[in-house]
Amino acid sequence: MDSVEYHSAKAMLEWQIEMGVDECMLDAPVDRYALEAVQPKAKAQVPAAAAAPVAAPAVVQFDPAVEARAMAGAAQSLEELRAALGAFEHCELKLGARNLVFSDGQPGARLMIVGEAPGRDEDRIGKPFVGRAGQLLDKMLAAIDLGRDREEASVYITNVLPWRPPQNRDPKPDEIAMMLPFLERHIALAKPDVLAIVGNISCQALLGKRGITRLRGNWAEACGLPAMPMFHPAYLLRNPAAKREAWADLLSLKARLSEH
Image 1: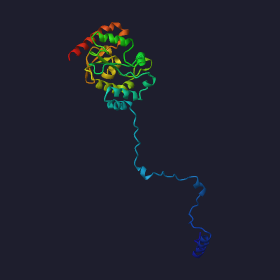
Image 2: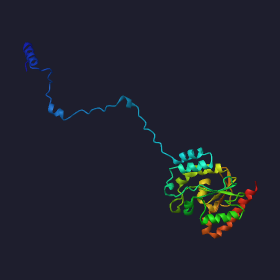
Image 3: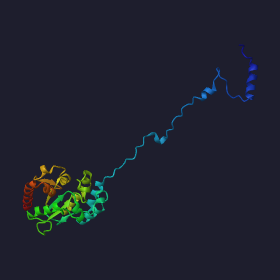
Image 4: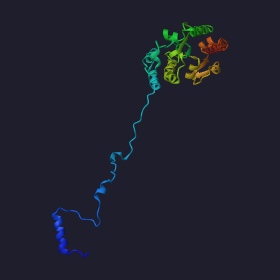
């Protein structure tokens, strides 16, 4: 094809400009309709502040045992400790109990007995060991010349839990852990010389062990004090043959108390 003469080409270009053409034509035709179906992917906009990863805020889980330790530690007397227990709202056992079962006997007694949890009679009256098991305990203590109501040779009694579990079920591990700071503070404020740890639950709380038939009769240490694990009186009511071992433990307690 003959090349277009210069002046003719110039005239055609000027005409196109007058018609509003402002782009140069390509050498090959382009299908503009086909281009509309293919759209370029938009790039994600990344804020400048998000260039470095932002750590999610830490989730702090509430531990009722921590609050129990703070409340118990603030108590400077047995009366204040009882009030702190009454104000503690994180143990669900409190919701189904009639009374807070705090203690019985003489504060300052040389022997402190730690039971497991209140039963029906204890929940009704508000004192530990007042049912059939409590009556047997009183007879056992009297056999070694001790008693909760004596001015001399008295004892002081409490439980691991101050509220009755439903249907007298065993306390759960989380319930024991939750109330343990109050028990430890209770022992510190009562200032006994010797502990009698009565039953499996009490041994689990204060010794970190279970298996009362193996533990009983062997002196241990709890809260910095000499401690004697013993059968629970309720167990003795069901197993009278075990009273022989219980009598041996009572004599061991009496001997330890007579050393001072």
